[in-house]
Image (cartoon, rainbow, N blue to C red; front, side):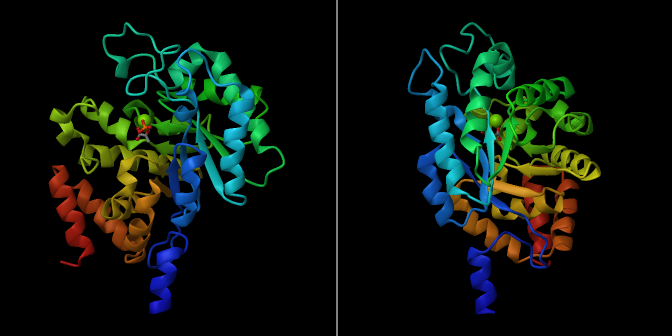
Length: 316
Ligand code: PEP
Ligand code: MG
């Protein structure tokens, strides 16, 4: 039993009956790699590349500078998965030289992939740098776009990846309800989905993630959010593709079990949360997680959903 507890404390993520749920780290750059490895991350599920763009308010970083940063991260996970998100500028992450300054509602304006499609040279440089950084490495590189709204967005991103000669899986983040509702259509163009539950909550509830007064609506236990997670995961399963979560929701040990029960295939979070999520998953079977997920979806509020899942998993 001690041995099992130890394995659960360090090994790959799995439910009590051995259903694998890779536990990946969210990182902002090479400086976060050590903590991810220390926590036993099986790879990187979200590399937020914005950090590279923060040094200079007028220009994008050079291709060389990007290659170096990406290479450092890719080399740290020789056999693992590394999911790199291309630049997500705008709204809560504005960049002077890319983000329009005159938008009345920046969260609903030109941000994420929309910014990159308006500045194709920035996207091209980033994808070329990624291709060069991955050259000769055995790493499983995956690249995804933030703020994909529909199939046309997914196609534009996949085309840009192909044009850059990138040998990687291409994915779409699900952060806008339209992408969750039509996930199968988005999956015609890309090979995986990753749910950004922070933005998905913001756009589902019309509740700005930066406004504390509406934080009740940012609660990832909201049943409406769980419904959109389920829709995305079911679409991915039907297409034989993966659907991870890389928003804050994945770092809640109880919610991690519910997400697994909804059909999510990997969980990515800040390194510090990985041991807690690993331990929580190891306590329950996939069938228990599925029952907890069904109970949470049947609730009418975030608090009720949390209590219902807790009741199922503690055997009440
Ligand atoms: C999200 O929106 O859930 C997400 C992972 O991306 P970010 O928090 O960087 O917007
Ligand atoms: Mg986001």
